[in-house]
Length: 227
Image (cartoon, rainbow, N blue to C red; front, side, top):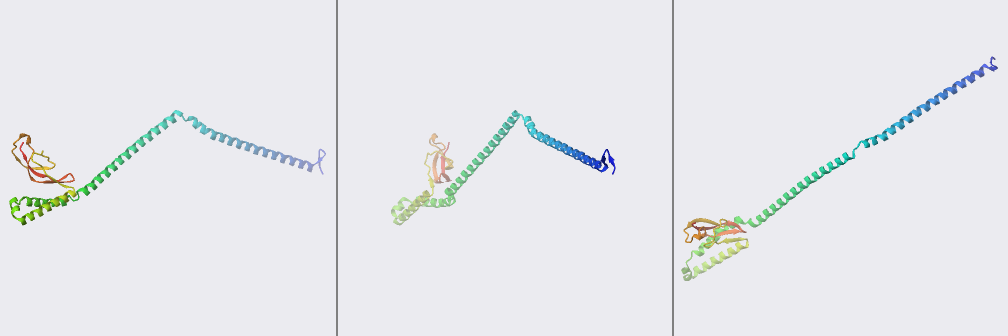
């Protein structure tokens, strides 16, 4: 077996192979350590940038500008609240007006629902009045049967007027010299005035008027003094 420097060739070859493997492993290990160190440095840098970015953004916010924005938002909210309150008050007032109108309409229907019926009965009252006023007093004293009939008509007229009053229907009875009121009187003609101070006042009554709950149902027909 050949020898080199006193050692056999096989032994030298084994030692050389072991040395190459050891050098290769050390180089591989150093490469892994270098890559791990680079990755760690990169992650640290990224985390540092991510952490510092909000600070940079926060450092750019101006406190005065933030206050102005808050004030502007506050004024806007006040304006909207005022507008909503105004709309609410208007709606509330309109609702109250509608309620009052409906209440008045219901009340008017209750009070004046019989207006048409009352107008028809006024003709009956007029006929009864004319009948009692047309009988001569002398005939009543001489004719007992006529007197009984007359008394029956008077009682009927009185009862009818009581029914009228029960339902709010009242007579309008102007007197001579009363001031002419267009709400309750209707002038048919004029007569000469004996006293100038009586001008335009009621002179004579041709037909009685009627009012239903202070609403004129039929004005009294009158003659007035000339002015």
